[in-house]
Amino acid sequence: MTIHKEGYTSIALCILFIFVLNAVINFLLPETLWFRWIIYILSFALFIIILQFFRNPYIEVIKNDNHVICPADGKVVVIEETEESEYLKDRRIQVSVFMSPINVHVNRNPISGIVKYFKYHPGKFLVAWHPKSSTENERTTVVIENNQGVSVLFRQIAGALARRIVCYSKEGEQAEQGEEFGFIKFGSRVDVFLPLGTEIKVGLGEVVKGGITVLAHLKK
Image (cartoon, rainbow, N blue to C red; front, side, top):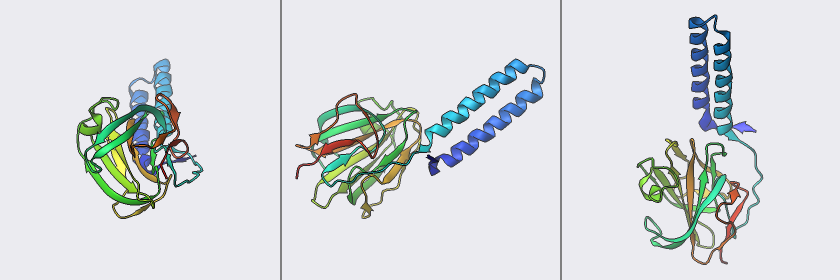
């Protein structure tokens, strides 16, 4: 398992904070051994939490043009028909995956194709399961069109803790199914908007794996 490049700065700052904190405690309370050990243990726990958050385990993606694979680790919290009003402007099936702070936070392309649209939206930081988070929170929107002319829109959404969304997608580029397209720090969600008639292969509350779980089958 490797550490994602988006975590290098955060991990370095965490190490610096732990070093300064422990140095101050040792200087101010040299005789209070029990308290120093509590700080040592809490410091170690903080370091492990930050380290595991930015983990980037190797996965083997099995590509299939008719499959939509899950873009993120987490739990399915929404499956519903809705109106997509930003780009596609039609009725779609929305499938949303919520990522908790303990999930891997690498985001992956659900299909292969050409990136037809990308836009970053500044916004609020409502909790990720709030009904208005899809339209009011900080977010990015990406649309990929596959070689059969089918478009899938997906959206990274910041949450109450997630204060930085990273997206590598660029309009006109070739996107590969399962390839990293972004990262969200400290919990959030990803919405996927699929054509009506798509066969959904997951259920509400199901735990899913980014790049592995088949989210849906597209109509041929």
